[in-house]
Length: 330
Image 1: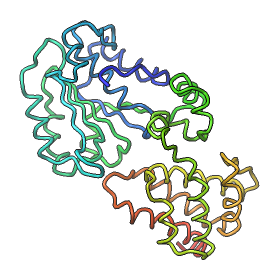
Image 2: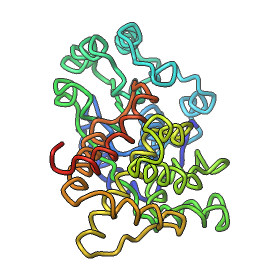
Image 3: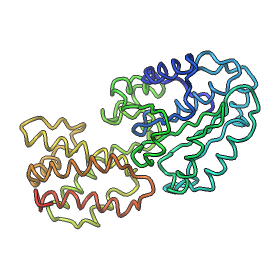
Image 4: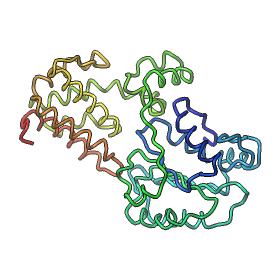
């Protein structure tokens, strides 16, 4: 994906970067942060192409110069992309040392040299510490683009040496319109509204959409809370789903239950979850719901790279069971 399109909801971020570049204030390191599925990597790749372009139009690559041809072939000598080599694997110090060696090399053109670090929160402590000197004493003409869905997992020393660029969740209607132009109305119609706020994630999962399993997961929680099944058995209904996605569902459900207990409407996204949601609402006291909701939000802040997914699934189910059985004693 050498030249990703410019996503319509990224207008504020592009405006900010264009002003910095036009004013000669392009930072040596940008930290692109926000939830998964909002297009941070698309933005970073397009920005990298613009920085490497020999005849850019503001922050847009021309598409015709030698640098753009290299980008199209994914063979630009002044671009390094660093990412975890395996799912749930850390970025190790050896990979960061390779990045450091790369930025110290002479540039091939008069444009920038760019290092793109995807899932930057996966850097282990040694890797993050190794990057500090490069962030403190940047090589002239080099820009580091760090992309993360979990900035809090990066050391404060790394965050403080980068210019922050925040990408919030997309408006559901904006996400829906964009997805419909790419995939057609019918393909997008079944996606719940909260999923549309992460349109790139929807694109990744559309061939086997996970939202059809929402009622199964919620029923498993209701059964565990009611004591009909054990925590281990209930957690098996979460297998094969991205931990981030399950956590988003649970935040949504806990929020809906709090609203219900306070006299508001639950606003479920599909009829299949109404009965188990009502069952959970009767079983969990309000204080337990508040404690559960806070715990889920803290988990969402911490993010989930490098975790043991089986233990995490069990922990999520256990949190719901404890909310019902312990209430305010947790």
